[in-house]
Image 1 (spheres, rainbow, N blue to C red):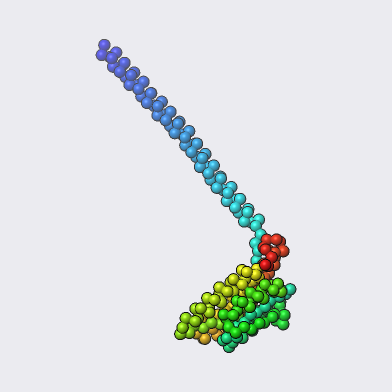
Image 2: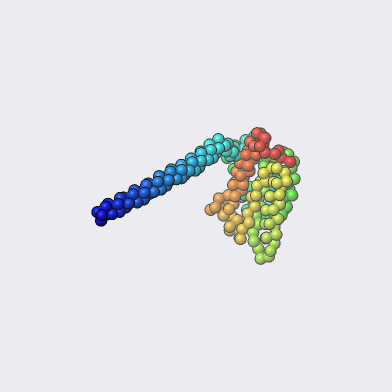
Length: 225
């Protein structure tokens, strides 16, 4: 009798073990199924990101970059220059004219207009830019700090006025005004050890004039106003 009871107990334990095994197997199958879906989702995300990167790369590759040429022939320029501190401004003027020559222009075709000081540069630059006769205007001056606040007034007026001259005309008006602490710094920037800022202003005028000319020819920039 005891042997029969023991056999029944072992059979019951065997059924319980089988049920636990089946339950664990089902859980593993469900987990595996969920993992497959999760992995598939990650693959879709990675694939979408790769597609977006490819599209962005293709768009960048197909876009047309615009860079202004540094050739000055067939362009007309004017230089408005301040007579105050002409020891420096004459050197800046020479640097600008040499730059026009070096880049294919003709210094004799550049109109040079003298004004009393840097404060008067904006009104003359704007008037000439709005004449419709120039592809660019270079403004040259030198403002050296003194013992009063006159320096700030003149420098700020020149910078803001020349910026407005270009914005109000649609013609590049290039800021070639030195604002320095002393005369030594000014001479250093007028052909001295730090180059000639007049020449740099002329090159900027050439580049901007050509860039606007190219964009306007394709209808991508408004004409001068």
